Length: 122
Image (cartoon, rainbow, N blue to C red; front, side):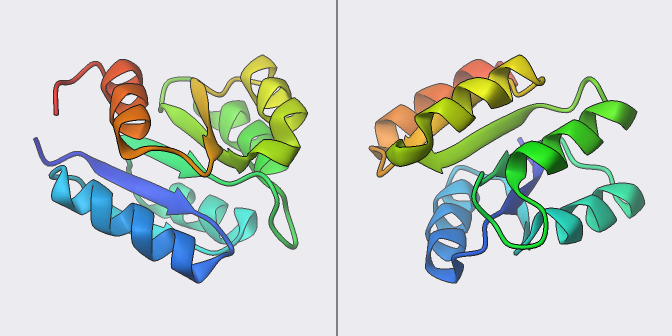
């Protein structure tokens, strides 16, 4: 498959867990710790998709999503956020996210979202 994705989260342990699982699914994973860092990486490299947290310092995931959508309407963006920010996830869908998943999530649920958003079978 070889899809290249950007995972954005300010919590290092969450980044590592998601990265490990996505790599096990065959993705090439690049990580970023903030929305600003993600935008820098997106401006210089091509990705097949983005997994982004909502609550982050400097620039949150909703703001980063808005910036992404100003320049790129097609790259799939999947919002990964805590259940306490469900409203933010729904807002993200309205602003152009392709899907969201609430933390903590089951791996089968993440797999189903990935298959749906990327139109692939894992």
